[in-house]
Each structure stands twice: as structure tokens, then as C-alpha cells.
Length: 87
Image (tube, rainbow, N blue to C red):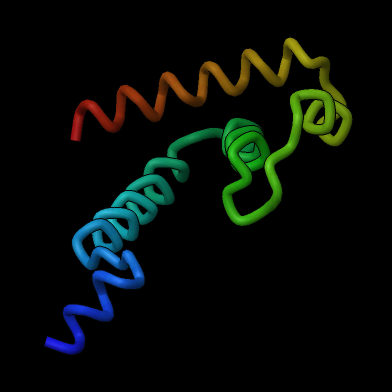
């Protein structure tokens, strides 16, 4: 019908959209278990609700080295991966 044709033309996939919304909610919930600094690093690096930042930009804003940012990011990603695998 007309509505189905419009969906095909726009490329909107309701299932994909629902999955994305579900994933976003899950990520927000899992982020609550991270330290404030870990969450800030991931939000900044991935641009969650903002423009993505470089390691250098995050290091400067947090007052730590690039390697420090990299280590925090790695630790936070491992925690999220472990939580995601355990759900």
C-alpha cells in the first residue's frame, strides 16, 4: 500500500529502528556501571550526544596523557563487552 511504499522509498526500517533504540537504552544502562571518568571518555570518543573527540582533546580536557585516555577507554570497553556478553 501507500504507506509501505513510502517506507521503502525512505529506507526506514521499523525493526532496525527499534533495535537501535533498544541498543541505545542498553548502552545507557550499562554506562551507569562505569566510573564517571570511564563514561566521559567513551562519550567523548564515540560522540554519544556530542561531536567525537580525539585522544588529545580528551586528554587536555581531563588533564591526563593520551596514553591515560587510551587506557581508560580500553578498560571501559572491556567492562561494557563483558556486561553485554553476560546479558
